[in-house]
Length: 80
Ligand SMILES: [Zn+2]
Image 1 (cartoon, rainbow, N blue to C red):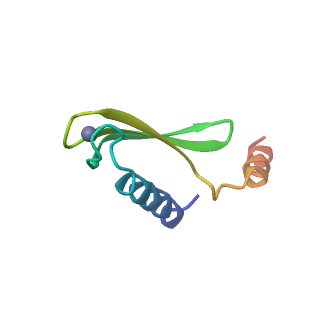
Image 2: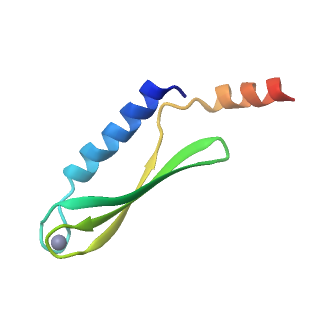
Image 3: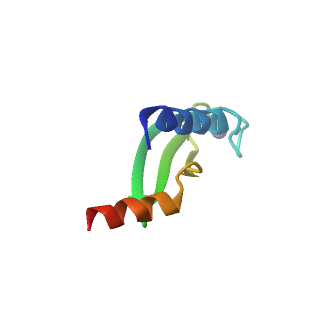
Protein backbone atom coordinates (compact mmCIF):
# COMPACT_ATOMS: atom_id res chain seq x y z
CA UNK A 1 0.00 0.00 0.00
CA UNK A 2 1.42 3.35 -0.94
CA UNK A 3 0.60 6.78 0.40
CA UNK A 4 -1.76 7.67 -2.47
CA UNK A 5 -3.86 4.58 -1.83
CA UNK A 6 -3.95 5.38 1.87
CA UNK A 7 -5.10 8.93 1.15
CA UNK A 8 -7.89 7.65 -1.12
CA UNK A 9 -9.00 5.25 1.58
CA UNK A 10 -9.11 7.96 4.26
CA UNK A 11 -10.86 10.35 1.86
CA UNK A 12 -13.60 7.83 1.07
CA UNK A 13 -14.17 7.35 4.79
CA UNK A 14 -14.85 11.02 5.34
CA UNK A 15 -17.27 11.03 2.40
CA UNK A 16 -19.23 8.19 4.04
CA UNK A 17 -19.21 9.87 7.46
CA UNK A 18 -20.21 13.25 6.00
CA UNK A 19 -23.14 11.64 4.20
CA UNK A 20 -24.39 9.74 7.24
CA UNK A 21 -26.77 11.80 9.38
CA UNK A 22 -27.22 11.17 13.09
CA UNK A 23 -29.83 8.45 13.59
CA UNK A 24 -31.33 10.34 16.53
CA UNK A 25 -31.50 13.96 15.39
CA UNK A 26 -30.26 14.05 11.79
CA UNK A 27 -27.18 16.11 12.71
CA UNK A 28 -23.68 15.69 11.34
CA UNK A 29 -21.07 13.36 12.81
CA UNK A 30 -17.69 14.70 13.79
CA UNK A 31 -14.69 12.39 13.74
CA UNK A 32 -13.26 12.05 17.21
CA UNK A 33 -10.59 9.46 16.61
CA UNK A 34 -9.54 7.03 13.91
CA UNK A 35 -7.31 4.03 14.14
CA UNK A 36 -5.99 1.95 11.30
CA UNK A 37 -5.17 -1.63 12.14
CA UNK A 38 -3.97 -4.62 10.16
CA UNK A 39 -5.38 -8.02 10.96
CA UNK A 40 -4.82 -11.18 8.93
CA UNK A 41 -3.39 -9.05 6.12
CA UNK A 42 -6.52 -6.90 5.92
CA UNK A 43 -6.55 -3.23 6.73
CA UNK A 44 -9.38 -2.12 8.94
CA UNK A 45 -10.14 1.32 10.22
CA UNK A 46 -12.41 2.00 13.17
CA UNK A 47 -13.49 5.63 13.27
CA UNK A 48 -15.19 6.94 16.38
CA UNK A 49 -17.64 9.76 15.67
CA UNK A 50 -19.83 12.01 17.80
CA UNK A 51 -22.90 13.91 16.63
CA UNK A 52 -22.18 17.64 16.73
CA UNK A 53 -25.81 18.34 17.61
CA UNK A 54 -26.88 15.84 20.30
CA UNK A 55 -23.63 14.07 21.19
CA UNK A 56 -24.81 10.65 20.01
CA UNK A 57 -21.77 8.40 19.56
CA UNK A 58 -21.27 6.08 16.64
CA UNK A 59 -18.44 3.94 15.33
CA UNK A 60 -17.79 3.47 11.63
CA UNK A 61 -15.92 0.41 10.39
CA UNK A 62 -14.01 0.53 7.14
CA UNK A 63 -12.13 -2.12 5.23
CA UNK A 64 -9.53 -1.07 2.73
CA UNK A 65 -10.85 -2.44 -0.56
CA UNK A 66 -7.69 -1.99 -2.57
CA UNK A 67 -5.46 -4.44 -0.77
CA UNK A 68 -4.98 -7.65 -2.70
CA UNK A 69 -4.62 -10.63 -0.29
CA UNK A 70 -2.47 -12.45 -2.86
CA UNK A 71 0.02 -9.61 -2.79
CA UNK A 72 0.24 -9.83 0.97
CA UNK A 73 0.89 -13.58 0.85
CA UNK A 74 3.58 -13.05 -1.75
CA UNK A 75 5.27 -10.44 0.41
CA UNK A 76 5.19 -12.77 3.40
CA UNK A 77 6.80 -15.56 1.39
CA UNK A 78 9.60 -13.26 0.31
CA UNK A 79 10.30 -12.38 3.93
CA UNK A 80 10.63 -16.07 4.84
ZN1 LIG B 1 -27.59 13.75 16.89
